[in-house]
Length: 114
Length: 117
View: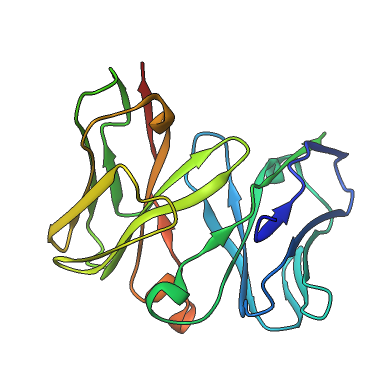
């Protein structure tokens, strides 16, 4: 079983829709959880990160972590065509040394239609 | 892709030939990483560096070596390229381990597309 599972999609939604992107993981020791956005033929860029369980909001984006279920989510409200990209979840065990190395999901490709 | 360049951006080579990819940063960040990205596998860490001459292996290090003789440059070498090393290679940098301290982030370069025939 892969440590981090993410549905690759593709996911297609109309402009203005609420988008839900999800990842599950198997290692309960993961502490930090991140979402990256990657536009076509570009490098990933960090969108949000959270520590432990709970929600974190930044504008139209909300990241949610449920450690009891080993499940993380990214919600995008009022989605825009400019949100069309591949979204990667990532997580790390801790801080420092090899524990700080990112483990990525495979990414979900999102398309927001005007 | 602030302050990070990768060269070459595209390369086609033949099986068995050596290949070196270069990552150059102008941010003076301490940590540098090499990833490969493949369909069906996502991003996987090859090697990383936590300082000049300080490097360590990542998840998929077999067949790759790295060197860092200056803060700004991190080289990835495929000693004898194989078709399984056809991929998109990304370099990343951060000031702190994984870029989590003080809201710092791990910045990624634009990538190098390598095709091994």
